[in-house]
Image (cartoon, rainbow over all chains, first blue to last red; front, side, top):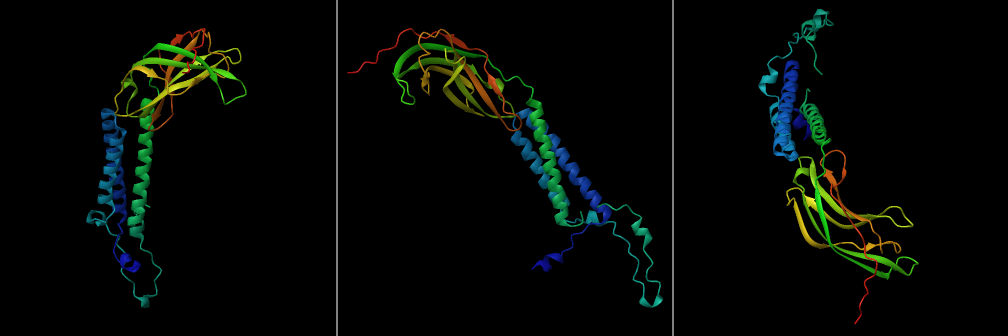
Length: 102
Length: 180
């Protein structure tokens, strides 16, 4: 049962993770500002909460599933080095130079 | 951020932090507001009795009966950080044994969205105006004040006294209870 879920690919690449975090923070902050101003105008704090919850739902839809836009920069792993060459501890330097994000 | 669960976790945590900040903003926008409004209290009838007080060792205590009119516009108190008001009418007076006596005579809850124009005529007090002795008879200065608790969404619970109180003298003689 669990192994069935584990086969679903959910990962994002590093740039995709950064993009996803920026997107949800932006959406929630914007909805918070809109909700605060609207709630202040109509004098109902409940509307503020509802608007932030709507922003939460939108950002869930946008950033929880690994949409293709978060997987545009896959890591370029080195090809599998054959066992016979003996130089097997050579590290893939290029991909590690990118800034890791969480 | 590499799995759905870790993304959901950081999304939820960020949303909660933002919500907490908004709630604090709601508090800070209303924290320094003056929640006093003018209140008009008018006492139309005062009656004083001397009845058995079964709660103590003394024989008889003073029991006052008030009929009052109350009018106030509570609309300025309400804003987005007010859920309800708890209004109460209290009587304050001094006796020989206590320099300050406070008795709550009447109260009312005004919820958000209810009618905020308070216009009550010939109200009788909800609770007994019992003195713990004979301090009501011929007391010349009994002050009625309408106060309220503001119940907020977030922040402190202010206790506000309405501006406008009435002081009245109580009669020198007891009303005789007629029994038929």
